[in-house]
View 1 (tube, rainbow, N blue to C red):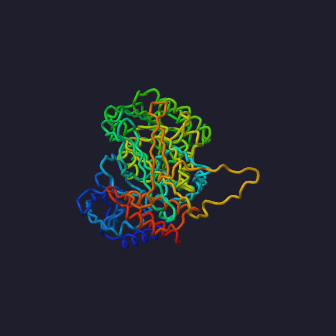
View 2: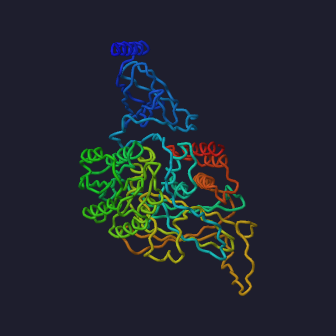
View 3: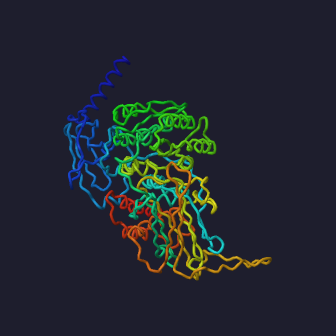
Amino acid sequence: MKTKYWTIVVLALLTAMMSVAPASAKPVTVKGKVTAKEDGSVIIGCSVLIKGTRNGTLTDTDGKYAISANTGDTLVFSYIGCITQEKTVKSAKLNVVLQESPEALKESMVTGYTVGESVEDVSSEEIRIMYVPVRQELPSEEYNEIVENGFMKVKDTPLSTFSIDVDAAAYGNMRRYLNKGQLPPADAVRTEELINYFSYDYAKPTGDAPVKITTEVGACPWNPVHRLVRIGLKAREIPTENLPVSNLVFLIDVSGSMYGAERLDLVKSSLKLLVNNLRDKDRVAIVVYSGAAGERLPSTSGSDKQKIKDAIDELEAGGSTAGGAGIELAYKIARKNFVPGGNNRIILCTDGDFNVGISSGKALEKLIEKERETGVFLTVLGYGMGNYKDGKMQVLAEKGNGNHAYIDNLQEANRVLVNEFGATMHTVAKDVKLQVEFNPAQVQAYRLIGYESRLLQDEDFNNDAKDAGEMGAGHTVTAFYEVIPAGVESDYAGKVDELKYQKPEKTVPVSLSKELLTVKLRYKQPDGDSSKRIEITLADDKANKVSVDFHFASAVAMFGQLLRDSDYKGTATYDKIISLAKTGLGKDAKGYKREFIRLVEIAKGLDKE
């Protein structure tokens, strides 16, 4: 009797459920294409989400998508800078046209969904803005402490010496935090990397030198009685087809911490972008590491792109992280296939969480310092969140004569690995150092903005054994000095009591000219051991006739100081940053500068909270 009773109950429940469900609801795989109304171009990375669920996908390189749904479901199509659309599923085919909206650019697109379809076979065409969904908390990220540069008195310290830095990882990481609805930790904000995320219109090198120096000076936006000096470097540009042969080793972290759409899946899509742009003469090998390291693909010609992509597709995450063993094996394979005069480089893709074998920062530094003598360079691409070890990866890139980028979405991968391939992958000048001498007749005190981890001793400038930064083809580097002019009253300069036992020597300026400072630069050829020197001077006519790029770059510098809550932020505000950045927009073909303004607006809202 009991069995019969429960059978009746179950049948009744099933009947009730069937009566509630719409008669027209049928499972269907919906396919379609998303395009832009303005010009008909396909939209890559558009979010396609089943309303009321976390099930969704992204459009691929052709603007196409495929998603399993039921007839009657509502699909939500969202894309930064476009008006969100909702469409009801009526058949297996659903094309959508999105319209751009200036107002939508102000919105933060932070969507939590499960990616159902991965973006595959990504081509080299320009990728529009695509944000990877972020849902996790950030419990154990690690950043090196930054002790901010203060003002230095010219009479005591007339020289400022540092290694250049072309990394931009802090910018992508900062963007990831803001898009998640959080202000980044202060030590995650390296102001020089925010500034150097953008390329500026500097004069190109002429003659034999691979680098040219540009300087300008104007009023300091956050402290108008101070002057702001911009020093810009531009590396020689080389057309992609003329770049030397590349001998690349993809070193991929496939440990358990790399599991997920924002980690290994994004690594795969990123590297496919690079593979699509390889020439037949270029070669790629693949090394992976988790509990141990192994070679997944021997060095393969760029003509066999499908073979390389297939090897990438087969990668799966799991296990611990023997990063040191992976680095050793990658260098071994790079040396085995070394191309004299070529671009011999390891591209490390990881979250930086090494926990097996050689894993300490000092041990890894020694390993990298030893291996860089072979002429193999190291590029470090950071992925993921939650256990991201930024400090460790920054050091690896510095010691490996390479660069460091943080990949938070497919657009950033396209920027780093396609649009700036030469700058990212091919070095034209290594061990690049700057030394600035200030004129005490014009300058009372100065402060270098950022570059705290790149400071050098003054004597290091002429020491060719001292390692410094590298510049890739077409790279630009920017450094700002905030200057307190001679005779200006300022608490920042500080005061010291007169000495009791000795009298300081009086400095007699050799010239009362308008020369503010002298910039000296040293560099080596990529395969050279001896440095060469370049020198220019900067005069200050006390005017404020600065370039459009000066306005924008100084807005970014102000933003970095505000995010860090700097002791020297002066009158900086988010509104002042936005206004200054808008006056410096200039040419913004890829929308990076407008995106910056949107990020400042997000930070402003979060800071109010």
